[in-house]
Amino acid sequence: MRSTFRRPLLGGLSPAAEDEAAEGEAEPEGPDREAADGDRLAPRREALPAAERFLLLSGESLAAPLLAERSTGPQAEVEVVEDLGGLVAHTRMVLVAGVRHLVSDTCLTYIHSLVVARILHVSDLHVGTREDARVAAALVRLAETVRPEVLVASGDLTNRGRRDEHERAHALLESVGVPVVAVPGNHDLPYTFPSRFTAPWREFERVWGTTEPTYSSPALHVVGLNSARPYRHQSGGIRDAQLRSAATRLGEAKPGAYRVVALHHHMIGAPWRAARKRPVSRRNHVLGELVTAGADLIVAGHIHQAAVSERHEFEVVDGDARAVVVSIAPGLGQPRPRRVGEARGLQVYEIDAGSLTVDTHIWRGDDWAMTARRTFGG
Image (tube, rainbow, N blue to C red):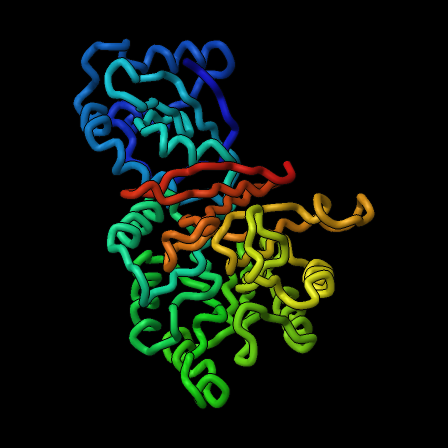
């Protein structure tokens, strides 16, 4: 099996010994190079060199360095040169910049795109209800495979806004080991009087510092907005002053950075019935202002269902109008397991040079499994 992809150079890999020694040698071009590549491969079912036997046995350990780094330099070739399924199931030998490595199909899935950045998006944890330690452990494992740059948590981190719930939610999200952008949802407000109105964000801000955080890097710029309101329960809103602030913050993105806005209340309808889950107030106005401000992706939660759409799919706008993808993550928690229409899942976003890929993962009882992939642009 041979298929070639032009991809960015991936750093942090341990090459096989024979390739390491030959790194400084000139590579032949065209057919001669293909022949040379073939000469370096051990024939199927023949014993591999010791260094490659080690890589084969520890193939999964390559996932972390393979996914952790990306090059800012010129593109290099990532080439699948042999299917090693006859030796170990679901394993491929790949060439990265002319050096051989053995990786699993899972790992290969995440290197077959020119990925600029990845975002892990969770919502509606509802810590304080039915918590499952397996869900948290599997979230950490998924992050180790996906290697997101940032974790976005779009509200309802707790169930009743209590101090101990906020502390446990904070510990769970921080355990993933990447920067966290967290915004509050309607369940993160205290359910007691008068603190719901006199100090609505005290416990949230005690662990997160702010209800409207910003994360910025050369690849990503994420702006959090607080759509929850003490005097409302299911519905929420974004004030004009917040929109002006969001426009200023989005304008501070580094050149070329992908701009993301996170809030709790959704902007697009649920794919299944969710009559009591109201979208953000004035959503046409809010969407228009965020698009004008430069948002590329707007993420939310609230409805415990996955939904993803591009602006032109639901809004009558000129074909040249700026595109923006609107996404909702299913609930990470499941406070009402018997309620129909509330899925347990999360979203993974892959941003490359010309497109956005959204992977929806759902909970299968003991681990996360991807159930859908959607690609926009490109």
